[in-house]
Image 1 (cartoon, rainbow, N blue to C red):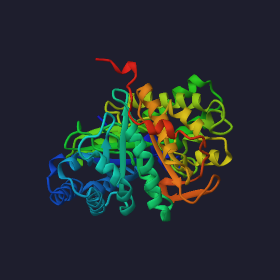
Image 2 (cartoon, one colour):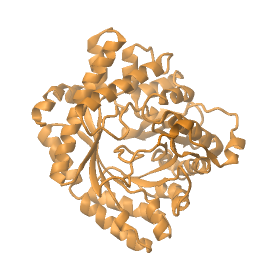
Image 3 (tube, rainbow, N blue to C red):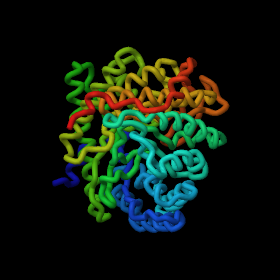
Image 4 (cartoon, rainbow, N blue to C red):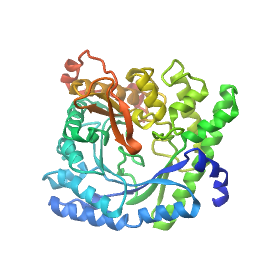
Length: 451
């Protein structure tokens, strides 16, 4: 049984080392809101979200005050909206508008689920929703979108990959006056999970309960501080120290999730124990890797250090909770991590090195600013490369690229807040257009046959 004694050790971590609950996310099923009339469907959506999530923010704030644990974000994820599009027809942007309105009414930071799952092909409503993404993200403030284009079981839908190259470019262009923020709210997945509490990729999976509470914890600063105090110990002892630290962080997430579940009367889903960085100094995954012994993130040895970090975090977290899920690992979003930003500015960290790192961590090529004139085919090919890593390695991978309209390599975008800022990174100039133009499907790998 958990009680306040479980978090007494974490007081210093909270006060001095940027430990926080990054998000409590309420998942809400909208399957019962489907209707042949899109306006009726939107009315049902607004009523259900505002009814189910009316106390989410106030409950989170109460837990913060009572336990002294910072809860940075309160969020909502909903059923992939493409599932409703197939029933209703009409202008799918209307769904984005009502999600934005409902999220503002209940006071959350973001709402995720303007999404489609097309890894094996397009069902009714999928193409329509994907085509609506750029406008939907341009006219809303809090709506996030994701599309799953591949999986280990299904292979990679290359027609969807090609579509997403264009969608990302259009999303950036329509929000060019706001530092291309539309593209920063859009994720392309391979092996997307149904219980992810983190934006922009969260959606409420069809296997989830009608409503559920998920918790995402974060503590890169805590891990770095523990390593700094330990000195130059052998790497096996480094891994053991990270495990023990991750255990403490996850116990705090378990406490908050269980308490939020009890107070809201909603089932407790999972604790996602990802090390999610911020632009704040001392809250960086890159700085953990540098504390392990790299001169700068991106140097030779980075992938090995990250693999050890990711594995140790998972081992420690699993011991602390029977409900670990979501993505659970170490995030490497360039613009959201102070150390990654510095390494990208210095040229130590390249997109190619980041791609290698994604083979051993969660989740993928995240929050990377690229030249605004990068072609849609090149963006699609980067998505395909990252999806292939996920497909073959049976892990979740993702791409969140931001084409910086009107900017070239070396210039910067600044989103502010948790999304941070970052330099435009170099992208290869040789064209993959012929390959992307083939379309079709990359078959699932042999080891997908496990039944």
